[in-house]
Length: 124
Image (tube, rainbow, N blue to C red; front, side, top):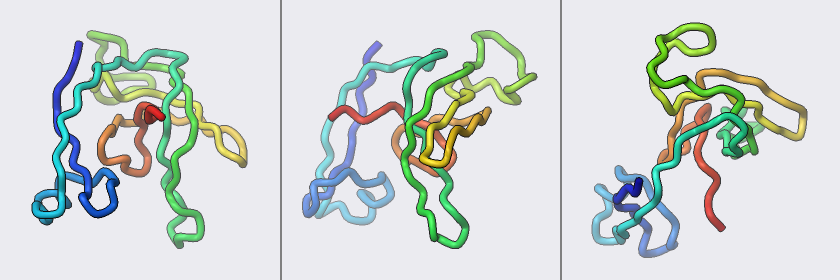
């Protein structure tokens, strides 16, 4: 299944920007149509996790390698590791320089890359 949407890019830097930034700066933002296949999370898939970073800012939020360890089964009711029915909420094993972190109920955030969320690895 393919999904069409637009990604906004700064005309000055060429970097992707948020929808809010694009709305505030329409003269310096280029909107590009993007078509990507809608992927479904499944156990064993490699993803990226955005760490929270430290409250004092000494350690910034950063992208970490992770592996999906559990997904919300279709038609399941909340319980065990899941308290919601969002099919893109998963359990992860996160790899960091200090060791492994196992966490559950990690929400998907493909565009915002908010701390404490996961997204598919960028294509390079």
